[in-house]
Amino acid sequence: MIDHIATGFGAALSAENLLWCFVGVLLGTVIGILPGLGSATGVAILIPVTLTFDPLTALIMLAGIYHGAQFGATITAILIATPGEASSVVSTLDGYRMARQGRAGPALAISALGAFVSAMVSLFALAAVAPFFARLALDFGPPEMLAVMILGLCTIVLFSGRNPLLGMGLGLLGVLIACIGVDVGSGTPRYTFGQIDLFGGVPYVEVMIGLFAIGELLNQLHTGMAEPIRARFRDLLLTKEDLRRATPATARGTVVGFLLGCLPGAGTTLASFMAYGAEKRFSKHRKKLGTGAIEGVVAPDAATNAASNANFVPTLVLGVPGGATTAVLLGAFLIYGIQPGPLLFENQPTLVWGLLASFFIGNVILLLLNLPLAPVFAQLLRVRYAIMYPLIIVTSLIGAYSVKNSMLSVWIVIVFGLVGYAMKRLNLPVAPLVLGLVIGPLFEKALVQTSALGEGSVLPQITGSGTAMGILLLVLALAVGPAVVKGVRGTRRTEPATPAADTETETETETETDVGSGTDTALTPPATTAPTAPTERQP
Image 1 (cartoon, rainbow, N blue to C red):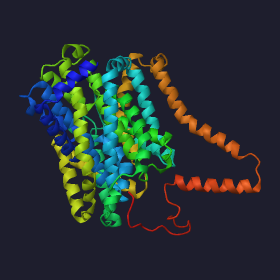
Image 2: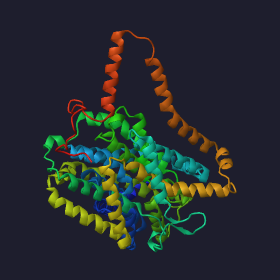
Image 3: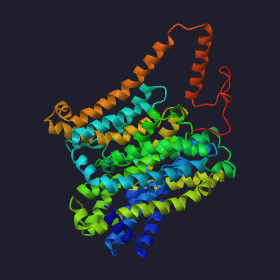
Image 4: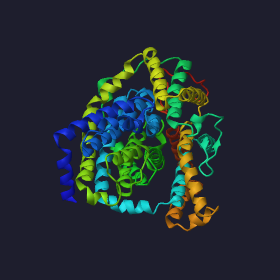
């Protein structure tokens, strides 16, 4: 193993490979910042440029684009609530609120640090246990993937706030929107209204741009544009408390991202949502999530980076893409005359280990590029919104059009921008709708395949798989566990107590309620006071 790693670094550290790794990371960051492009599109566009390169050099550059785009997408998600990738949607929930509170610098810095740490840990794991996880991935058939998708759908409750039924309804709406397109089982179009462009389904990148970027912009215009952020420079730097809170969140996000990334087809988007859901369950500051908590930024970003690295487990070892971008990279492998599969590590060890070593190098370059620039990026919030908003609109619409060169994409952005604006005015959570839209196609595919294996019945396939049953038991524990714990605590509180103890209990209950509301009680007006619009609005 050590000899292979040394061989890989020896190949990746050549002057030519270092240069193209830097170019790939830089281009990837720019591509990620541009709404609508994304890593898969960027890699596909630049494959022809690399046809004259050595295969290892070409793959190093394309992998650099992949990793750079992940962080570039987070920059716009945090600063202007415009996720460049679907996996960056979760970063807007707390990252944009941190930016509106004058803490854009710490949000960007902790995102870069968390992504770097998770990349290093996941790459060590990838190098050490890739064959083991490849065998594990082979055991994951449609029944197991169906159980994973059910687990993903159950996390909708975690994004629902205080009204789980409303969240489940919005999640179901997202699943129904995902049903637009060609039926997986029969191959017949449904709900396409004669639009050939909808045969592939509603493109979620355009939906995200509309819901978050245009929706937030319209909401700001309705309430009156806020003054630009005037944060002091020391407010743009990380504190020891930030690092202390971010450490366990990074660890949880890395584990969740790596495990899900090893599964064929799971991708990075599901990993980011699941990592945020894990924080909702296990973080000590879970009640502050959604109000600008640093855990809500670093956990999904760590999961995204870990999953993007783990996606190469099924890609390299099985020849099965782990996500959309690795599917494009798989095509690049074939163009260069390389056949991914179980024998790739034995037949071409220099190429494989050189590519894995370039992941380390690319992430170091990303950290050195973006960590010092985090306060600089944060200064974009000083630009007056009368200048920034037209630029956001033009960039968003051009990015949406460039995905398929179709005006339908532009109309989708506009329609879902109005939907996002309406949801903000009605104070409805956007995350359940997005999660339903993302998981819907994966859930349907796994359901149809499982049903086909069982000749029309799903239950025998599920019950016959120990892995699937274990995942469903985890779903049951997550669904029922909090209610059981709450019931036990309620029983304990009903025990007889002295008047003084009762008073103390009431005080504790009031404090818990204040923390759960995500507000500072010292700044919260009395209940009888009519609400007023704050100077710095929280979307």
